Length: 173
Image 1: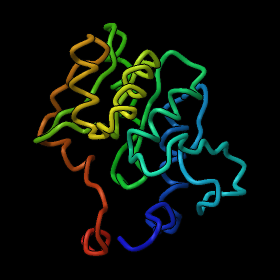
Image 2: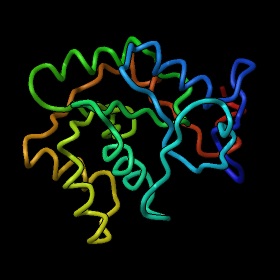
Image 3: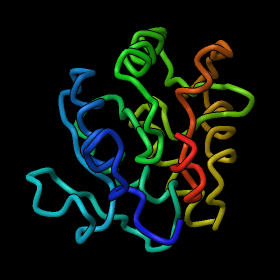
Image 4: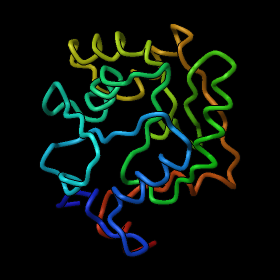
């Protein structure tokens, strides 16, 4: 992308602010941002949780968030999914009441709009120590320990998982 995605503007507001509003609309007991302390959201009155391990990708951010989380579940929403809704995320929390976290699956797993149990922290830290940072590995390990299950998403809802990785993605919106 060449710049911090969190600062991209969608609907007249920075993407990070939009995602924060989506998370708050779920009724989450606590909401915080996993990111750099000097990011575009600095000074906005929101707790920022920095990665404990530098350059460890999304798994590093999730591990730090799991470590910080004071609840049983951690609802993760990537900053670059501008079409995600609070209603869909609330559906994940309802599905998790069946005892395990929930990882949505479209044409692939969607590990960055997911509900993880805080018990996933040990596995995340183990994978990071081993240098295995791929989110697919994390989800596979969590499934093997019955900590998450996959939830098939109907194709009509796949656009919720549109993410921005290039300037062209933003222009296409």
